[in-house]
Length: 292
Image (tube, rainbow, N blue to C red; front, top):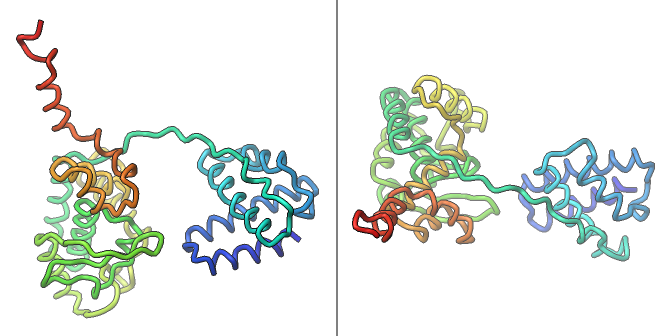
């Protein structure tokens, strides 16, 4: 019976324009719920009680705090659907609390580390794949693109004449962004070697669109060869772009470049501005030599 309702719910999510990653997460959590209910010998969703949901979200298979959060979100969405279609009389999942996730400071590459990395890729930019890798690092480290946005780029999304790039971001949002002249020059040289006018911008050796695994291999090799003592990943480059952009442009511009819909999501980079902090400390009355 639960399987029947979950299939209906996932179809509803598709019609309601949920993103593919969201539907995949919902599917995984609902499969976990089905397995949990089997251990409780519960066959009907109408027999599920609030205590069962609490046990599932917090205890079943010792989930991480992020899995627990995903389970709570899934149950709230699923039970809203069940209530909406009058399969159950009330949404018993609304009272399930989200776990508190301790916020950590975003890691980022310093200017010297990022320059070292750029030099590493410039030296190797004498081939199609070398130019591709340089473009990847420049787009990630200066514009802070997400992995999915980077991979989805097509040749026709780039206007080198006017220095614009068309981005497809999460939530199926689309927007234009100004492309720095230095990156335009690299892309122009890359496209001359690639010899395609349409299709994926960043391709693999097999002439297919690059994958997340390809990016991981590029980052791993670069970290080993450049000597940077940090694990390189797309999120680190996004934090790097945000941190250094905030130094010179402020929160508003940084928010626009990152594509944050909420200012609060950008504010976490404000405290990572050492230049502003140093200037403040110089102006602080108790930091002056003549202070009493």
